[in-house]
Length: 83
Image (cartoon, rainbow, N blue to C red; front, side):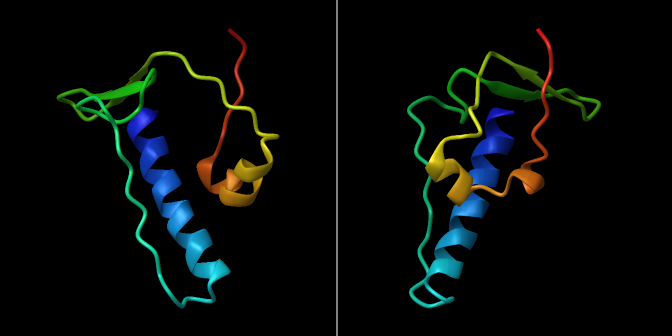
């Protein structure tokens, strides 16, 4: 989902920066979004009964070199589906 993905990217980026710098010179990652919510084409909505519903369309290509370096795919629990 849009917001969950943005939060996970921020957390993973912070971890990568901390590990790269051996815990020294810690950097803060700030996500900036032009609209009132994170996610761009993909949005997540919480229902009153606690469910998270995703809407929109996004494609992520796992082979991007920087993404492979930056993101922990196991922690993201990426899933494939057939349209």
